[in-house]
Image (tube, rainbow, N blue to C red):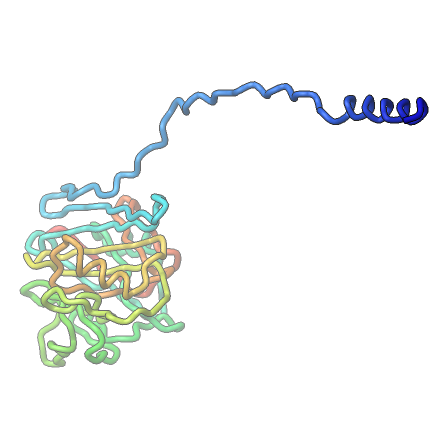
Amino acid sequence: MTPKTLLTILSWLLVACQTAVPATPTPLPTITVPPTAVPAPTLNPDTGWQTRYPGLEQRTINLSNADGGLWETLYILRLDPTAYRMTIAYRPGQPQTLSEWLAETGALFVVNGAFFTKEWAATGLMVVDGQASGVSYGEFAGMLAITAEGPDLRWLGTQPYDPTEPLQYALQSFPVLVKPGGKPGFPDEDGQPSRRTVIAQDGDGRFLFIVAPWGKFTLHQLSLFLTNSDLNLEIALNLDGGTSSGLLWADNQGVQAMTAVPAVIAVYAQD
């Protein structure tokens, strides 16, 4: 090996020693994040039954999704029909807000009624002050029938409307979500979630008004939920939903409908 060759090899080694091993990086400091001082509020899934007036209870059920977030809320009233009376207020062609219906009727609370046409006329049979109007639905529907003896909720498949019966008030709607005996009334998935309003009667004869305002339930889902719930429902009837859904107290508390409606169920304390 010549001196010149040796000098060249030594030069390569010097460069390699300067560049082959990088400097050791300085580690970043560890930062500890303290826990949140105020914990997030826990959503009460079920208030249970709370007495609002003698013979009238209220309950709120909050349903969560898979992530634990609020999915839907059910506002429920349950009343003893011997302590409260119901009527139907109906004005075809002249819809009113629930607040206006309250002012006109002087009721304790009002609930939106059944389906109507673009001309603001009910699509099924209505009876107000003993006067019937419209055409009765078939067995797919149900009816709130009110006589001098009190209210009754029926499935038209087993108790069709009789023009000779002494009805003071009546309202028809569809579908029947829980059929007599607590059986599922809407077995097919319709796939259309919406705001919902329901009138029901339990095994003890009490009436329930149920509003689901967030628009998450399909009719099929609601039918299964009500059938399998602890509400002990004997029968449940779907009322008009969507923007019509609402239940409003005389102090304007409750669930306000998003549109005016031509008919409401009005509830009063017995005289």
